[in-house]
Length: 195
Image (cartoon, rainbow, N blue to C red):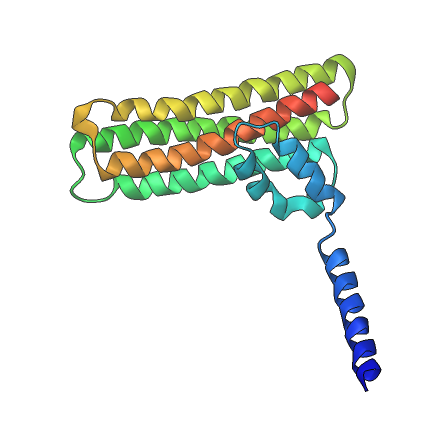
């Protein structure tokens, strides 16, 4: 009687273990994203923001850079929408409203630069040599400028008079954009070195 129970239990154990090893197997695209993100300033955020696109990225450094820029663009658009709403909130101090307006301008410039970078990245997929270097230089310059813009946004909130919820919420939005843009720049630079 014991052997009748033991055989099904062994079968279930083998079946369970076989199922867990195949379901936990790491896809090459996930490993590629993880190893690529390890070189960025914010690796956990990088992996978290790019993993949903693993099937698109596969193991392509160009697609990884493109997707990272798209994530930066999406986050910038979200921040821009947030700042537009925040600027219209009643009860905000004039200096805060002015600083939000300055941030909106800076975020708009950043959006423009990231958009140009995505368009430029599409162009140079068909280029080689000096032409590739020129297109890549444009992308690197624009993404770097976008990152500078994002960091500049908080300058308007400097000083003791600008302490509070508005500054904290704007900082959280801008920091999020700056981090994904920093990661995008690192991945663009890495792609440029490999090409």
